Amino acid sequence: MPGSGLTRAGIWSGAAASFHNLHQYLPTGYSASTAYAVYEDASGIVAGGLAVNSATGRAEAFIWTTVPAPGTASLLAMMLLAPRRRR
Figure 1 (cartoon, rainbow, N blue to C red):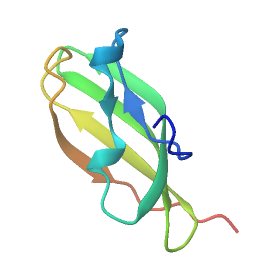
Figure 2: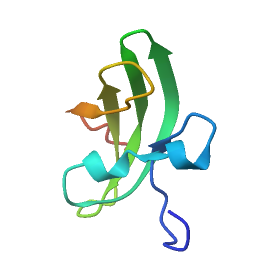
Figure 3: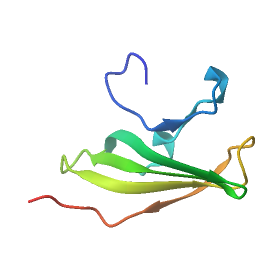
Figure 4: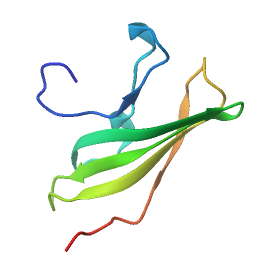
């Protein structure tokens, strides 16, 4: 987010007013997030990325899903993938 110094995952559809902050749907305890892949079809949008766990300092994989299709962009669910730990 501008001025915060932290990265926040988000999606948009071309206009500044269409920006949607995905980070707000993460559980508490995540200091930064990034969306690396976005897929869109008639049923909605799926965004994949990572978020940094503030307690461990480790990046964990996340998927954000939307229903229904773009235009309404109401995020209804988010699934946490098993954290990937690097050694």
